[in-house]
Length: 423
Image (cartoon, rainbow, N blue to C red; front, side, top):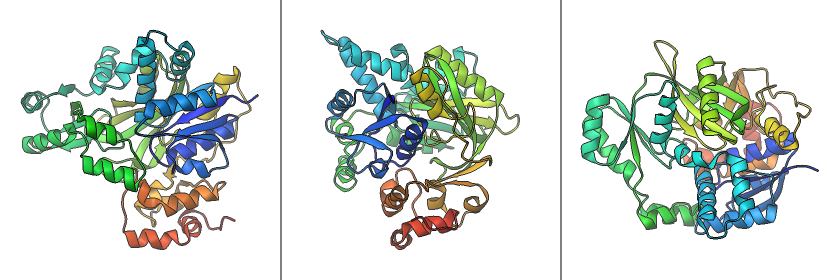
């Protein structure tokens, strides 16, 4: 009997659909709790879909878990991880805790004692430093006065990061004190009600409503700026052990603080050691991502962040030890399965639709491996036709260009990366 995985995601972002496909291909039955308009709903790989409601998030998750009865929950974004942490804490603090629910969440994400650490950048960086891992100086900032004192110590330029954000939305590199003060005020502020209402009505995404109503400020961290190249690791781990991992150097990005659009597979001993050390120390399970800066002058890896959920490259199968979905399947059934062939021999990968949206004439679409899900033409059509709804992840192009391409999205995608038409 196939193991059942529940993919939990709170926003209609495209990479969750790719992960669902990879998990199904590995041998799992994959259900999902997700927004009504999520693109994963058009894939043939989906088992059952359960509705995620941003105004009742915990009830959405508990109802989906009760209906799906999964062997494992996979978090597709930071807010989904936060919901699972909150569910586990709420049950533990209740007079009559649901032991099976708590056990499922801990089996899926790891030791519950680590939950507060992975969700707080400052606490995570302090722990990494204790482990002897190379990290930039990081300090929690609560006021403009603290910001000025901190920058006096770590110097400028510096990087300001807000907890509870992802995709570069809550990150700002500042080079002057005035710029830092302005960025701090913006990063700390909860979302405006007008933005929350627009997101709910136009994008059918209610995730900003409660943060806007409650007016809880974000916790902001200041971090020493490291000059170098960005790199990222994504892993599947089980009870504190890394079972499969992928390490990439970022080649191209949608914007200065945005998501990678082109990555290059690398081997980096310091990155591997840091990831394995933190996974072991925190007792993590499931998918997890780690971001690094590779110092320009030395190549040394500085760990700068953890992403306690699946990342946008987690679906890639690049051979033995580099297939995260196969590692998950093996962990659930208790033994290794027949490995699937890796998707490409090329080291450089152009992510679809990220690089195609950034520049449809990009040379990487021709020379690198263009990661288009040709086996799911409905997903390609959905993604291209709804490009504007992906704007939180991908860079903007002109509306006219997007509308023109949407008239024949599959053919357009094919011209960008593969010279044939999908039936």
